[in-house]
Length: 80
Image: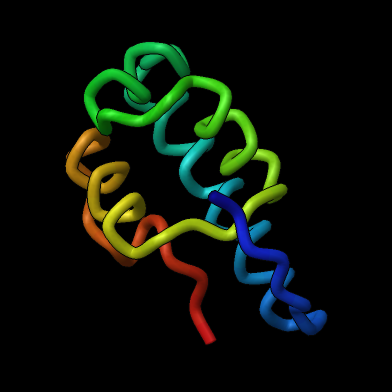
């Protein structure tokens, strides 16, 4: 089930930055989207949308991605 939530510009930028950071770290670790999706226990298509900054995700999904990449939070989360 999806909920439509209106995001402001700053929130949208955070989502896009998170996705770009996930992609950067995934590529740095030489992982495919399929490999990371499997480790994070999420659908590959959802990971594609996350990296593209197209969807807002649950914190539990962010944790799964972080664990799958084995990277510290500061590498994934946008700085204020």
